[in-house]
Amino acid sequence: MASSSQRAFTSATAVCSWKYEVFLSFRGEDTRSGFTDYLYKQLDWRGIRTFRDDPDLQRGADINPELLTAIEQSRFAIIVLSTNYASSSWCLRELTHIVQSMKEKERIFPIFYDVDPSDVRHQRGSFGTALINHERNCGEDREEVLEWRNALKKVADLAGWNSKDYRYDTELIHIFIVRFLGDIGRT
Image (cartoon, rainbow, N blue to C red; front, side, top):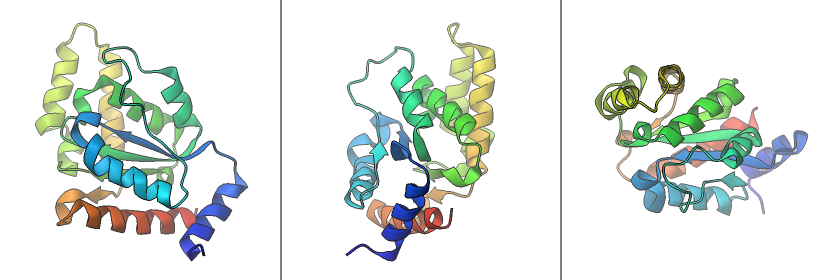
């Protein structure tokens, strides 16, 4: 028997047909085989169609157009911002596309995994270092890096979940899932 949150989710998604309910953005080397995998399994277990990228995507290539299409075909985005997230131009391009495609703030759900939201907002620590490295890289377009900076600030300004507030990843994921299902049931 479906819970009231699951029924609300199902009825809310029936109004508009999306290929995916959720696009999951994350830095694979930081969280793929732990936190993000468990989060994905919990979403899947609840019948929430979630897009996550293929771990075998070619490194160093331009972002796959299929990823951009998957963002556009997703109702919501969950962004797991971790220590090395900003070191990946792929992640930053995904993030920028999410922010541009999902202008309604209620569609973006940030999780700050082992990073301080203010470091993301103000681009300090690993986020600041990564962005400076992108700016120094001859192949990086300065305008694009500015877009990445703005997208990071917009996402960090949203109310999100900070892993440092929870003793265990499983606790964070449980609380997140309950709140996520409640939030989308009201949209």
